[in-house]
Amino acid sequence: MPFTSNCLEGKVILITGGLGAIGRVVVSRLLAHGARVAVNDVVPEKSAEAAMQEAGWPQDRCRYVRADITQASEAQAAVAKAREYFGRLNIVLCHAGMAHSCPIVDYPESEWERIMAVNLKSAFLVAQAAARAMIEQGVKGKIVFTSSWVQDTPWPDITPYNVTKSGMKMLMRGMARELAAKGIRVNSIAPGIVAVGMAKRQWDTEPDYRRRAEKAIPLGFMQPPESVADAFLFLCSDASDYMTGTTLLVDGGCSLYPMD
Ligand SMILES: NC(=O)c1ccc[n+]([C@@H]2O[C@H](COP(=O)([O-])OP(=O)(O)OC[C@H]3O[C@@H](n4cnc5c(N)ncnc54)[C@H](O)[C@@H]3O)[C@@H](O)[C@H]2O)c1
Image (cartoon, rainbow, N blue to C red):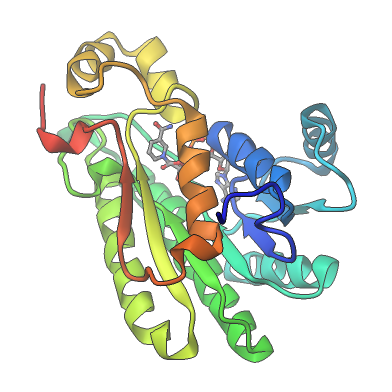
């Protein structure tokens, strides 16, 4: 069975936005299964080191890579650092993201540009740099994008966010098509309404959002971040080797019907 405690042994994984709420749970899961993990985020080194220590991540298998991946040079440097630390790169998880809640008629142009850069451009830059590294090293690696159930569902007040995740879907499918001949698999994970991170912030601060969200999860409860980590474990493991160009939807049924 592929999900033993050492099933990711020998795999070097770079995750962007790895110090976010979901990212931390994912990193812990990958480390628990033997991976070596380069954790990218934008937070300063000092607070990153403190967070990593608090999480109990082993220093010999986990390194912090500070980079603002909306900048091409920094995205490329993040990939180069992961290779430098651990010798190669097997898997990249394009996970960093943001959300900004605002009706589309009021949505400012500057916020549109920011969310396109953080969610979509950065994913392209990091995935491209990782693909180049894999090709150069002859690694039949994996690229995983963190999308969302809203990639196919117009969930209100975050329309530009939905657009970034829809764009990510085609980026994923296009890269899967182009890179298959090199043995590189490209897939997405689409979580639902997770009980930590950006959805939880909206849940706690926006009564309208909460009213809608409470009715929108067929399974009836917010998504445990551990279920997202399980999906990552599957996509990082050899069990997913015959999968490319598709979305692993783990959303408690949210996408079954667009409920308000
Ligand atoms: N929380 C949810 O319900 C939910 C649902 C579906 C998908 N997602 C996706 O999961 C991912 C993580 O979301 P989260 O809820 O944990 O959010 P979060 O805000 O807790 O984490 C996002 C992380 O990305 C980092 N980041 C932002 N800009 C960056 C940049 N330019 N360079 C490097 N790092 C950067 C942030 O510092 C933060 O640590 C996102 O892609 C999000 O769209 C979240």
